[in-house]
Image (cartoon, rainbow, N blue to C red; front, side, top):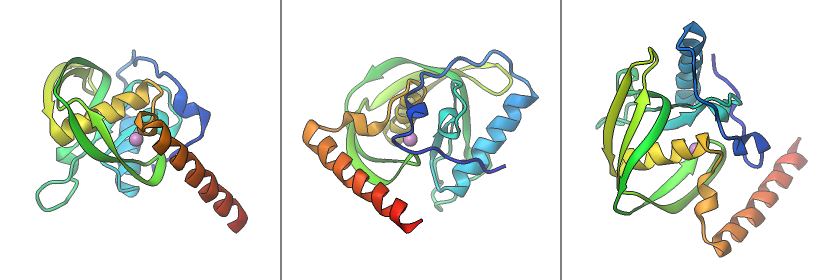
Length: 174
Ligand code: CO
C-alpha cells in the first residue's frame, strides 16, 4: 500500500527511531509498503520515519544502467549502523520529505555499514560514492536528522525563507 510521506517541518522527522526486535510478517508488510511508496514517489531511498513509523528501517533502490529501479536491486536494512567512515564527497542531494529542494552536501566517501535483512540475518557492506551518500542520508533520518541541517547558516536561512513562501502558496491554493 502506498503510504503518505511526511514533509518538513513535521516534528516527527526529528524522532530518533528505535531498533526493530521482531522480524515478523508485520515488518515484511511495512517493508513492502515502503518499497511501493518510494517507487511511487520517485525516490532512491526511504526511512520508515518518513511514513510516520519510528523504527530503524530503511530501504534503497538505485537505478540500473537503463535508469530502471527493479525490486531485485533494492536493499532493505534493519537496525543499520555505520562502523567505518573515510574520505569526503560532495553530492547534490534531495529528499522526499523536503520536495523539490536539491543542495550540495558533504559526506564520507566510503563507509562500512552493518545491518539486518528482513529475516534478522546480519550483513556487512562496504559502500562508496553515491551508494555511500544514500546510506548516510537514510541513516540520518533514523537519527532524526535531515540533509538541510548540513547547509551553511546562510544557505539554511535562504532555504527557510523559500520554504515558508512555498508552504504559504500551497496553503493559499487550498
Ligand atoms: Co530523505
